[in-house]
Image 1 (tube, rainbow, N blue to C red):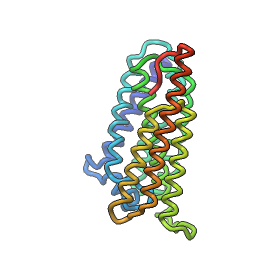
Image 2 (cartoon, rainbow, N blue to C red; image 1 turned 30 degrees about the horizontal axis):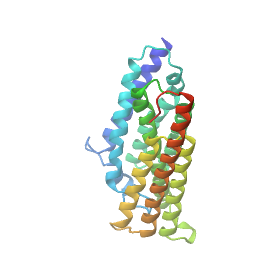
Image 3 (cartoon, rainbow, N blue to C red; image 1 turned 90 degrees about the horizontal axis):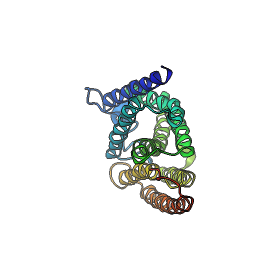
Image 4 (cartoon, helix red, strand yellow; image 1 turned 180 degrees about the vertical axis):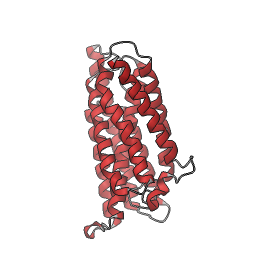
Length: 267
């Protein structure tokens, strides 16, 4: 019964996250998340804010989360991997909804500890995924792929959210201009992507999501009211470096697993 209740908890948490996303999108008559809190998260709010289309990645993430929740409901085997994922998965789903609500209700200051906590629990889930192996291709795509995308995107979202909160609080950059801060944050995001690639064995999903976010940061900095060519260039370079490192590490990891006769690779 304990395992059944855990599966129900995952399913309910997924529903809460999806409903929160529906509200946050403005589809229920509310304000789209990028326009909420006085537009603090809009593409023109800070030098590290991605352009609007970047947020469409949430649709892919939510589809993956729903697929994961459904798969959990019909899982019959005693799977230690998913038992270990239970806590970070449920926490990530609830924190996701809490972040959306905090921004929608204008509590921008509260969104920062929430999104930092979300990043932490997704890193926890990534540790579990790294230390265990998927049972097959479907498992690799639904579980590793979904939470890899989730983690990669939230890395970018955390940077953008932090910049928005600091700007709204009156932070003026310690004398540094927007170009300097944009270049610095984009470079740090790239380093995070490299670290995930190396530590994760060249997983594609985190790189894809982080690269997607940084690419749209570059687009936003080349057009619109807050142009910053240095930030755009740094973002593009960061994407290229993370992709190259991911492919190199993945190739080497694949060779090592082939020699060891290891099963299918992760997403």
